[in-house]
Each structure stands twice: as C-alpha cells, then as structure tokens.
Image (cartoon, rainbow, N blue to C red; front, top):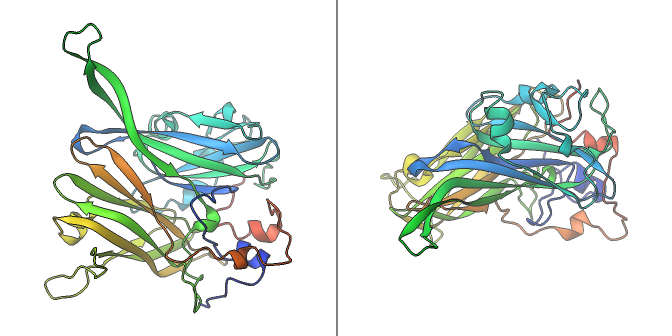
Length: 365
C-alpha cells in the first residue's frame, strides 16, 4: 500500500487523509464517541451515559446515531440500514426516534439521558458497553438513499457512576444517604482525527497514538479502550506497547519488549480491563505511557478507509472515580498542510469526493 504525502493542498489534506488535530478540533459531520455505557462495573459501580450534542452550524440540524456494542464482533451490519439507529423523525426508517434530535437550532444543545440504556439495552437487549457513531446534517434533508446536506456538530458523553453518598444530617444527628453521581467525560472524535496507516511521511507519522498516565496498583486500575473506526468491511491489527517512566519498554523474562497484538473486526469496540496486569502481568506501575499502533489492515471494500481511536481510563479502586485520557498523536498539528497559504477554506465541505472518504456512510432505508 502506498503512503501518500499529507500536503497535497487543502482538499487532499482534509479529505483523503485523516488529518489529526488538537482535542479542541471536534466539530464534524461524522463523530465517533469512543466509549458509552450502561453496565455494572468493578467494585459495585453502576455506569450510565448522558450524551450531549451541540449544533455548530448556522442552520438547524438533525442528528442520527448508532450504537456499537463492545466485543470481538463485526459491527459492520449495524450501519447497513436504519433499523438499528436512533433518529430524529418518524417515517424515516429509524429503529427508534427521539424528536429532540430534530431541528436543533444553531448553538443549541440536546441532552440524551442514559442513552445506551434507554434504547439499545432496554429495547434491543444488547450489552451495555460500547461506542457510538453520530451523524449531523441539515434539518429535513435526509433522503431515502442516505444522501443529505452535511452539517457540523460536537458530541460529548458523560459516563458516570450512579451511586449514593453519606452526608451530614441537616438535623445534626449522624449521616443520611443521598443519591449522587461522579464520572468522566468522553469527547467525541471527529472522523478526520482517526489514526491513519497511510498518513506517514519522512517527517510525520499519524499511524499511532499514545496514552499517558498509565497506572496499576492497589489504589488504581487502568483500562484501555479501542475503536476500529474504519469502513464496515475493514479489519485492523494493532499493537499495544507499554513504556516505563524512563522511556524504556517493559521487558519480559527473556528481555523482549512486552507487546500485545490485537486484531479488531470492523467497527468493533474493545476495552482491556486492568491492562497492565491482565495483558502484561505488571503489578505496580506508575507514570507509564502506552503506544497504540497500526500493524496491518485487511478489507473487502473496493475503497477502504482504515482508522482507529483509543482512550485510557484511570480509575480509583476505592471510590470508583474515573479519569479519561484520550489518545494523542505524537506529532504536532501540521497547520501549513491543513491551511496552506492562498487557499480559502470553508467551514463545511460537502463535495461528493469528501463524503466518499467518510469511513462510514449513512445507510439507505
């Protein structure tokens, strides 16, 4: 497979290569939320997800989404028709409808409470850990064949533990129970921020991501999540390698680097629980970095678009309080490549050639 340069002008840089950007570059027409949940966890934790969607365009928008349950399973079929989707309007062929997702005004925000449980767990019987794909488009423009006028949105999830806390009794006699939550944010990843195996030159390499703050101890555990964000016919193989605080790789008893190789089916979400211990047998880890890299990909698609994103979750063993660490590119944002001098950029590029490079296409009815 060839490795094209990323600097072929604005159209190629933005369209043909998955241009990575800082975490603040989230607005997109196609967004991956790398983790969502309605499930019980370790230490009697009880996880739920609220999803926040904000219209960043200058027109009213509609939003539709599909849930990808976790596991080594091919989720490609879930994007092949709308029967597994949550959409904004009756009569458009969606399996579920929430009218709040229709006609979201500019700068407006919709909040979906316990979105995984409300639709895909309670109604479809799926497991309650996975990821989400979100599409945004101009209100009322969706056609039966899936064509539409793209629009910009930002999606963010709050994944929280639904629990109780003990607070002082206001009457002054001991303590009383009170419902409470605590949790972590999970920013949506724009489609152009996926790791890209073709985005490698002599100067830049966006084919891998790094995760920081790796820790394993009696006080903390570290989970690693991975989403194959490729097209529905592409399987990827990635390597996961931990590094010590001094930058050296962890080694096994034969002085070989500890590396986990994982093949991930199309649109599959995986979460490695307590990865340092479960994958590498490490008991006491602090300040580790993990490198998640493309090794290979295989596809039946005539026009494959491979990509992935990853995240780390550091969890306090006593309280269950989690902290999110999103995968980061190790290279700087290439401003000159994305915004070349003399080229006028538009906020939304809806040309057919751009839409053709989305990893996932909107399904027909």
